[in-house]
Amino acid sequence: MEHLSAWLSPSLLAQNGIIVMHVLVALCVGCVVGYERTFHGRAAGLRTFALVCAAAALLTAATGVPGAWFGGPGPGSAGPAGPAADPTRVIQGIVTGIGFVGAGVIMKDGFSIRGLSTAASIWMTAAIGVVIGLGLYVAAFAATALCVGVMAGFSLVESRLPHHRITHLTLAFRRSQARSSGELGQLLAGLGFRVSDIGCQLDPDGGRLIYDLVLQNDDPEGFDQLAGMLSAAEDVVGFQLTPTRD
Image (cartoon, rainbow, N blue to C red; front, side, top):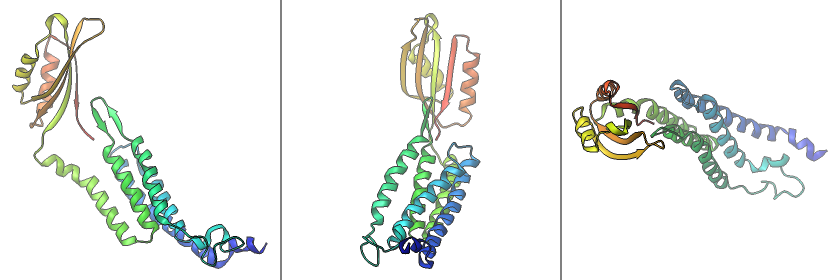
């Protein structure tokens, strides 16, 4: 009974309160980061980020009070300070485990890979949770501001910086009316597109020739022009245009 009463001792309750404070701060920080993803309609949003950050802070903060483990010092304990703790082992486990969560939000959408930024921000949120768990609030708040700023602001910066726009085009012709790769290259060049890669296949029934092309262009209006031209082409029996995006 004496050992059981240690679970409600003032010192142990105070240490539990400190852990809860870390978790609440991490929960708020995770919500701030996650709202940016929710605002942009991503699958991993407010709840995911809040829970990731809070869990990382909880595990890290718990390693900082080994004297409070299992009700504090008692029979079989390592002494007044309790069993030895190594927070780096917990941090290593968090870093390893969060990779599975990040991998779950990366999806292949046609020719595009989506979710890379969300996965990176989940990893960053876990790191922020670890820092909060260690009690480094100033660094955690600074990292939160940087993380939100990068995700919210850098997309605008990227769109304004000179860069190549990559578009994947799947184009189907009737076998008897199929154009050559050279003809396609000249046609696309007239709209400002450069063919950086091309593949060709015959569909299983042998009635259509299908081209898979990777295109580059610098004109933001080129996508609409190409879609309009392909829609009007009588020899095109089907096409799919997919811009590369994250």
